[in-house]
Image (cartoon, rainbow, N blue to C red; front, side, top):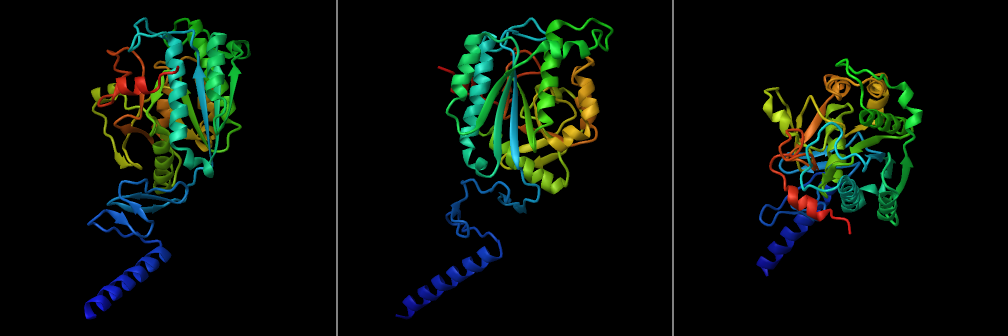
Length: 343
């Protein structure tokens, strides 16, 4: 009988202790079975809660003060142009439309994987398309139909922008029509971002994402912007060319990935409306004059703001396999490619 009373007392004390921890917003872990009794979760569950907390074992809890209100994804597509500045073939040697469709499919898959995040975060996906075949447009419309988020496809009117572009670039060379259409598409995307409420994700149509990418970026943005007390820029790709340099990097712990500071990216990145407004003049000029390198205005912004990329990568940039601007190291290229096939 005494033994039973001891067990009951222990059980009662444990229940009371868990209640107190829950009231004080403390977390405890049963290290015998990796169970978290306060939140009734296992250690391998998703422990972070968007807009409330970021929990990483054993680093503890971060109370989120910088809550994400909305996410607008702006996908720039042009399935008629295989390569903008190169003549080499892309990895997997497919038509450009295949990369466009798989990029969109990977975003859809990632959004559905992180669907629970958007109970309190509004979501839009906008495709800004230039000169894609109507069959591809129809395919994209079909893919976007019956999704849980709002979406639309906009056709780029090149004539609205081309007169604003300086025909001679920073290298004193003539700007190609392909590059002008690219700059016009970026300009249109930036103008759309002016009407957004919070986060904007600018995406090129040759970035195929892992299913975890959107969730990791949103939860990491909340965590690190809370810690930094400032806005930031996230790039989803771990570019190989940055490992050829000896620049110093700071390493931060995101939700489930390590993130490092980088000084350069290409044109796919996530940031906030605050950053867009803060550097509007520089970004607007980016669309009107071809710098060298083309992303130079972005790099100048990264000198003043945190720009981070994940280790390992969250997305595959589909260039030629020998391009140092493309395939991220330690990433399952073929697996991600096959997972996002469009039937």
